[in-house]
Length: 235
Image 1 (cartoon, rainbow, N blue to C red):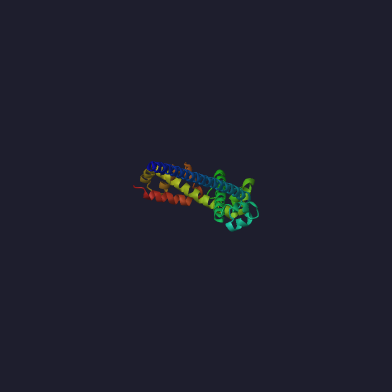
Image 2 (image 1 turned 90 degrees about the horizontal axis):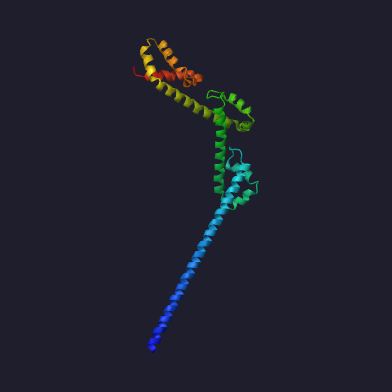
């Protein structure tokens, strides 16, 4: 009887211990779930704050930084005058603000370049052999573009880069023309007995093509390219 009572008491105790262990396990799971939920909420809140700060800072840059020649040091002096600078500073570290500032400057540089290149490409009177003074005058005639000349050296540098690209492209196109006409050139080379008449024959086969006339402004270089190509042709 006593042994049976002890056995039942033991079973009851073990049952109670299992229940208590189950409760403790469940409490632990609930705490972990709550902790994870809080962490997720904190992450979401932090993400929203950061996103809002980046958006505010972007607006600040667009509103105040319009000169793509500004350094970070110069830009900070301008940005600090706006109270948005302090508010974003609580969320975005200085290194991040500098990174976004430089990205904004790069975007301004690209935008200016795209505008100028479009103008150079669209204006028929502007070619790679144009003088900067002529191009500048054309820019001044367009009220939408005149403000870009506040940094004239930059505009001139962009024109020089564009002109170099266009000249290189025109020369490549001319070489393509020579390759296309290689059969006629070889024939003219074989049939010509004198150098002068030979060149005349060759030029007559090329002059009607725009890829030839595109190099009119640098005809000595065009002639040199032609002579070098002819020298390489097999008899």
